[in-house]
Image 1: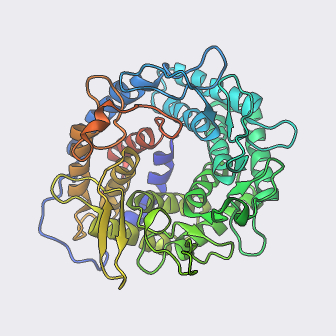
Image 2: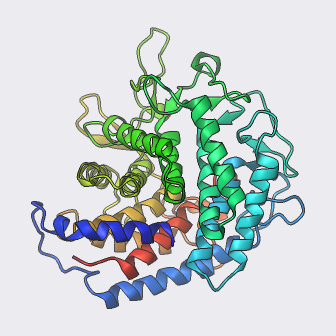
Image 3: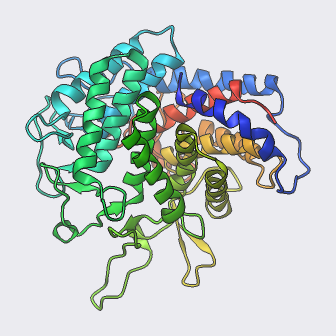
Amino acid sequence: MNTATNFTASLALVLLLCSCSESQPVQHARPLATAAARNALADEIEASLRDELFAAWYPRVVDTEFGGYLTQWNADWEPAENQTKMIVTQARHTWTTAKAAGFFPEDTSYLEMSAHGFRFLRDKMWDREYGGFFWTVSRDGAPLFEGSGPDKTAYGHAFGIYGLAAYYAASGNEQALQLAQQAFHWLDEHAHDPEFGGYFQNLQRDGTPVPPEEIRIPPKDQNSSIHILEAFTELYHVWPDSLLGARLNEMLEIIRDTFAGEKAYLTLFSHADWRPYLPLDSSGTPIRGGPMDHVSFGHDVETAFLMLEAAEALGTDLSATLERGKAMVDHSLMWGWDDEVGGFYDAGEYDEGETTVSITQDGKNWWTQAEGLNSLLLFGDLYPDDPHAYHEKFLQQWSYISADLIDHERGGWYVGGVDKQPEAAERDKGGIWKSAYHDGRALMNVVTRLRGATLP
């Protein structure tokens, strides 16, 4: 059973309550109010998932010579010479193929490809001397230490756990579960902060957290934190361990109640005690704006879903998480949504008075659009009469993705929407940070939800 199926079953209990909420109904037709409409759209999206996304990636990326998955692909799906392998990409492909095995059970090749990824995680990405996952290895699996950053990261371990847990759920392979458990304990022993909670992101090879002053980057950040939450949720579904549950709940509370501040967008970087981390100028004055202090609409709409998924796995009351998740999606729609053609912009910044957001990066990267698609349908089902009209925006988002992100001729998604970045059509289809994870997960989730959600 895939993530969306688990999630939909639990959220069905709160759909009726949400549909009767105090939000004022708007006078518009419900475009996804009938099973026929939902199923027709599900058929369309599933065909794109199977024939345009997964068919472009798999089995093309499977490295039959050295194991794991090839990484770098140009616009025409030709492999590049450099095929450095990162734990994140390898684990994401392992996760995606495991989920695809459940989504397309008639195609047994997906489970075989996920097993292929598991073996590479076990035999090459795992550090047999010190434990933990290497950040990068060469194509043939030799560890790479470039000296310009940490040897290992909490972010990387999160995805290692994520992929292993999904493969175990799909296959029942006990070795995969054991390695996921080992990775969790290694991460918790070395990177967990016993004083302020959460996890230090940057680690030396032996697991010692890197002092921030050595590499001039903050010790904690929202991106690693939300993916630790995601990974712990995936693992908790197959291994409801008490310590894991406690850490999952801790991460949920930190992200929901600390990272997502009053204005309902995520602080990007933090000190160990969760104070916002800002670089300083020569006079010692914090530098606002820029890469370390902006609104990342994609992370906000993604986190809205990940928080609810975690709360559902824990079996806790959903009301506080629902309220915060909805506020984050609403904030992104208010400031980061393109009303004309759809799509969420990459980034914005608040003015000095913290009253308005200006768009500072008006591109529309692929992963933000995928996560937005997923959350718009989810909150449309939860709040069908809300003034934000999530269902209408979901349909506009799918139309935008189909028109400006999907390469209908060569397959796969462009790195960014061609309405803002026409050159994206000829940029690389795959890379160390781009696999079939965000878009694959979103499309599997929305198809499952369109077909199976209980309608209010």
